[in-house]
Image (cartoon, rainbow, N blue to C red):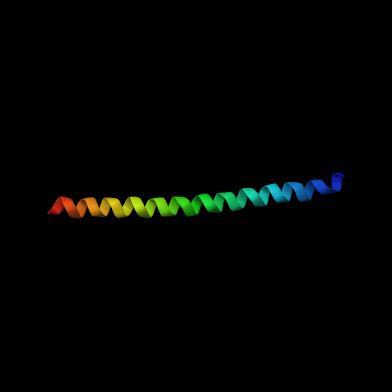
Length: 47
């Protein structure tokens, strides 16, 4: 039964890596939207 521990730890590690990559992707999307809003506000304030 102990021989399954490395596989279990590996699966948990892999799940964490995938989750972190997912969060980084979401953060990138959020940063892009925020940048778009800031650019739009600067453009509108110049009018």
